[in-house]
Amino acid sequence: MKRKMVYGTVLLIILISLLALPAGAANEDSYLRYTSSGNAFGGGDDLVIDEDIEGDLVLGGSRLDIKGDVGDDFIGAGGMLIVNGDVSGNILAFGGSIRVNGNVGGDFVAAGGEISLSEDSTVEGDALLAGGEVTLDGVINGNGSISAGTLRTGKDFELKGDLELEAENVPPDLEENVGGSLTVIEREKNDEFVREVSEGFGFFGFIVGLLSSLALGLVLIYLFRDFVVGLAKTVRESALKAGLLGLVMLILIPVLSLVLLITIFGWSLSVLLTLLTALTLLIATVPVKLLAGELIYSRVFKKEAGELMYYLTGAVVFALVYEIPYMGWLVQFVALLLGVGAIGVWFAESGGKRGSSL
Image 1 (cartoon, one colour):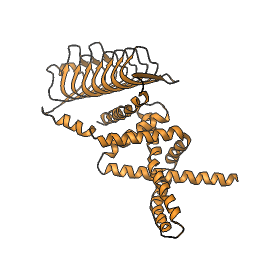
Image 2 (cartoon, rainbow, N blue to C red):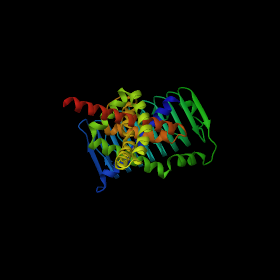
Image 3 (tube, rainbow, N blue to C red):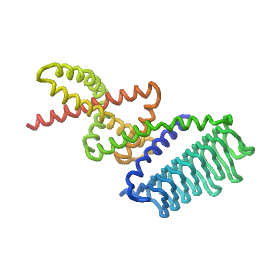
Image 4 (cartoon, rainbow, N blue to C red):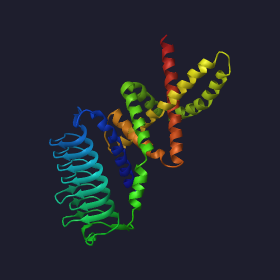
């Protein structure tokens, strides 16, 4: 169950992060960009990748067709995803229709309306699938966790590990094709699953809030990288100090603003302090999300990436956690305290360095 929750979180991280990709291609039908490390990022209405990718491949669009091989992970979101090439790493995908015709060297994690694994495909790792209709006709060498409205298996299907299945039906020969234990939770044939998914992901305000958070953080990191990275480092190295200072600042600053406001010559300082406080609150959680994304990305994917990817990861995780009643409020408050305190520590240390240099 813990492994399932981890992969589910990672999937959501990647999928919602991909919403930002098409913005960079407003004047193009499709695009593909490469990094110096061999990774490729792209998007478009109808994107065909007919070349091999050395590292990771991250795509978002209406229709994605991957004909070449991928040297590491494939991460995609779109209306239709077709993977004809081999993927050496993991596949993490979300879309209306997801079809894998090649081999997968790692895990296969997907959520969508229709998910299929063809008869010529082999998944070396685990399969975590959630869809309205799931069709499996390949080989899965690891364990499986499948949540589906309808599950169909072909004559070549084989799962060598354990399988957890929640579906409206159970194929008659399923147990014979599972090498380990089979756990089945039969779902009643109703629209409850669809309704829960729609309620979970259909909030317009949630999407707008997330995109606003992504835009703010990415702009800050792009324009003021050293400042944001420095704040994240402060949170990592002095979390308790930052949290306590943040609490003190949130208590004292409003009081100080009120005192200045009722004095004859202090009202202008009060307005300035209020504006600075509002700006601080606006950017306070950015370094916390950056740090959280770095920790999650390095521990889940077990590799390094850039600050932009770290922030995308952290921002989506926090957006999801914020939706949890009570716990979300607590996490948001703690993140705010850490961020405000880190800003206070940064300014104090910067002032100290300038003073010593004089």
